Length: 263
Ligand code: KIV
Image (cartoon, rainbow, N blue to C red; front, side, top):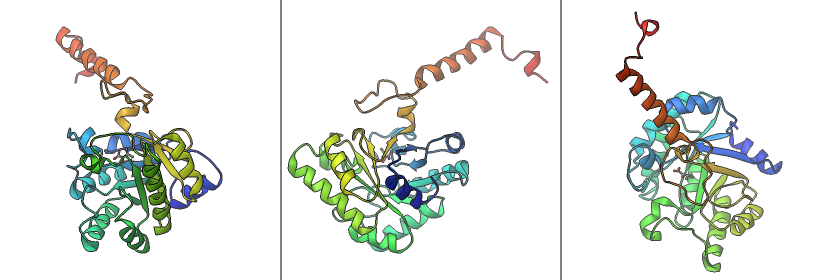
């Protein structure tokens, strides 16, 4: 997928699609040659790349740095979405637009922001200024302290109604797509059916138009991290650890380097 029109077409043709987070040049080069449809430079880089326990520590400058690396790796092969970090779109129009401008100039083709209420005017303004906007509802990690933890959202009818209304209003405001994170499958299915724009799920069941996973989770790189929604496609932790240990072993045994690897 290369443009927001491709997102629209996927929805119209009822074709599922994939998004994976990516934060660096090397993985972007690998993903650029893969079948994965689009890349998200998620603010989850605060966790996966910087070791923080929440995404609150991602800043516009950090997002810009990592988005640039991903854009250089992906070339023009993949659609890249860059996350607007915590607070960067809640302090007024000018600072929100400056933040979006930096992330877009770094190489993103769209930005993603979390939440509905309070964001509709900025979404409209961004879209009207040529910045495609992806919404993000349900478990919105930037609001973790307000939500009382990383919990499934939309458990009761009132909460479900609110998420559905927010999705519809984001669509009305011009968003081209909405991520639904950790919500009951039935709610995700209902929202997906109600919207003309595609939904992308993570922990939202099988009925969203697309799915997204964090790269390190998909590759099984985070030891012991196995939430219910996650399926790993590689035993990254153990395979990488074995490679490091094999290298170490050969060096200490004197098996590497040999003549072959020497000048
Ligand atoms: O930052 C991120 O990785 C995300 C995904 C979980 C959707 O927002």
